[in-house]
Image (cartoon, rainbow, N blue to C red; front, side, top):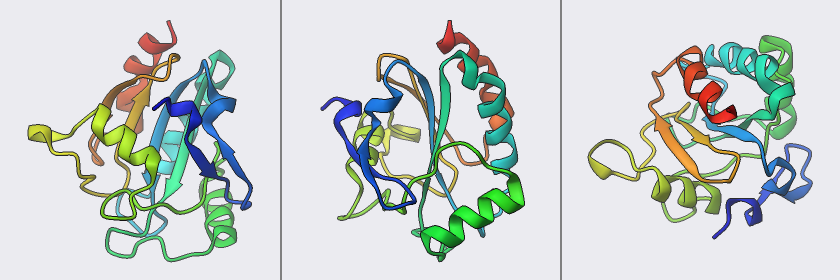
Length: 159
């Protein structure tokens, strides 16, 4: 499966694919508004603003599977991200990242970049995946990895 063919839904409810991001370096991250890692929105937005003109984007996928830390509606999530952290990077509708209802994007990401000891499960909110310009998954980062710690890898992927 090509990552660009996977159907996703914007926070607005519009269905689309990742085709619009073809040729870009991406950080794809499962996010939550009420998590100890939520302040990472600030760092993710900083990366987005720093590198977006070089063909880079952060794609945020809210997830309520970890401690019910993303209970809001799409409108509430959008409002929170904008008012609290000035988020301008693209945000999408809530997804499951584990279990029977795992979104196809996360099935793809987990298979391409397994976690510690080869486990595919996402351990918590703010697990990040770096995707190259060709759509290949380069690596997975743990939730506690700060966005600024991705900068060198992003620069390398941008070329």
